[in-house]
Amino acid sequence: MGRIPDDIIQTIRDRVDIVDLVGRHVTLKRAGRTWKGLCPFHQEKTPSFIVSPDRGTYHCFGCAEGGNAFGFLMRHEGLTFPEAVRSLAAELGIEIPETGGRGDGGVSEQVLAVCKLAAATYERALWSEAGASTRTYLHDRGLDEERIRKLGLGFAPDRWDTLTQELRKANLDPRMGEKAGLLRERDRGGHYDMLRGRVIFPIQDARGRVVAFGGRALAADQEPKYLNTPESPVFRKRESFYGLPHALEAMRRKDRAVISEGYFDRIALSRAGVEESLATCGTALTEEHVRNLRRRTKNVVLLFDGDDAGQRAMLRALEVLLPAGLRVSAALLPPGQDPDDLLASDGADALSARVDEAVPAIEVAIRRAVEEGCSTPWERADAVAKVVPLLVAIPDPVERSEFGRRLALATRTEPADVMAAIRREAREDPGEVSAEAMPRQLTPQERHYSEALRILLGEPELTKSLRVAELEEVAPNERWARFGANIHEALSSGHDASWLADQLEEAERARLTAMAAEPAPGLEDPARALQAVRDILSKLGKQKARAESKALTERLVSGGEDPKAILAEKQKQIERRRAAPSATSS
Image (cartoon, rainbow, N blue to C red; front, side, top):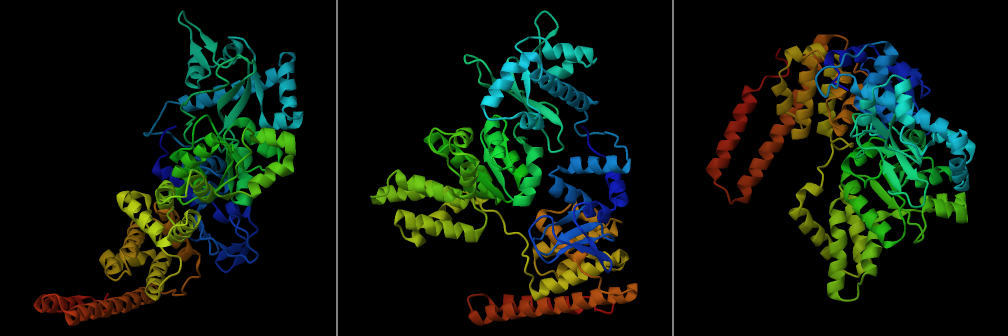
């Protein structure tokens, strides 16, 4: 699919009723010019979720989730930005012309049509006379008819032309079957089916559209045991999960995702009531998978085999999950058992209990390192060295420090030595420690600055009377200066908070939607509003000047620097204050 034109996106922003959209999922009550309800993204008893129709935004003061209509759909329905835009466009009757980007001349739509037909073909074959033995196989694995139909499982007959003929009957281009990875061209012309003699697992995107297939061999000597269709214009293996649309609601409700290794593993977890489970599609976890998860939850449970291979797979997964700030637990199974085996031997309660009793994955990594030897100084140093790279990958300093303390306790080493090893590793690989997000608890200066920006959001015309430099010069820090400049630039260009929400990073977007959700200052007269902004900026400027002057005086008293240079700085500071416009200037 090609790029969605910016003017179409803006048209959707302008026409969507965010109160109506959110109100389908949240019971909202009017509260002045805003609407209030219980947050759908975390459990709460007192409403702290605010929808601001004037701004086209929402914000929760409990969990700091915020955004516009697109953001709400992305968070609530688990959609990507383009998917959210297309969903609202279809609802509003807005046609999206495809331009630029990866424009593929309708190839994606044709591949989707092929996948839809293939899913129906395989499902029909499963319930035909030819699929009797496959149905028996599935029943023997504990799947009843209701679940088989719910999952859309199918059967690819052991023939070369089952799907090829169906595509011909439907007048669909077999070359699109090739692009979907379902057909292959014969040397002498024509095509043949790639999936033959297999149980078929349809792989769906977040919108429930079939985009790919996995096939499990039915014959004992058939190789490979599992065969997946390759990447295509509509399927990216590195970011896709099996079971995603079925898991979305449970993921929102339980605020976690349970990751397993295979299709039957995911199905077994679902049978045990763990509906928030997902499986990768024939690949290890990637950064793309992690971004997909992070849009939906912060908590991940890894369910791998308890043998050495399973633990190694868990450690590899941690390397991509931890840097994203996800909180990862591990639920290890008995050696030699997968979720299907445990479900069959011990029942649904035992399998779900394994998930619920999962421990922090870092603790499993620590235990594994200690078990490999921790009696001599060298072995203790080796054990610490094995875990430290994982600790460095944890962005939160409190989590990192606490797990460092636990590592020291397990290896019988000094906590200070472990923290020194973490700092040393971080210096060698500084990219692993993420920058701090904008703090949620504001300082007095940040509150005043935020108030000035909030007035501007309510009176965008004021930006014509206010230079962006006036905002930047008195900002509490560089991050706030950049935030203020972004707001000024957006408002002075005719954009609103809803538009700006799509341009900002997560932390700044949360700050923006929090400001938009707060009650208006009540300054109806633009002249009064402008004066209020200038008063705030003047106050902030004086506070900043006093702080800078105090710092220069301390440097002068402490010695060690050229006094003339410091005095020259103080003189420049005084001249800047004299040159600065007063609060009453226009």
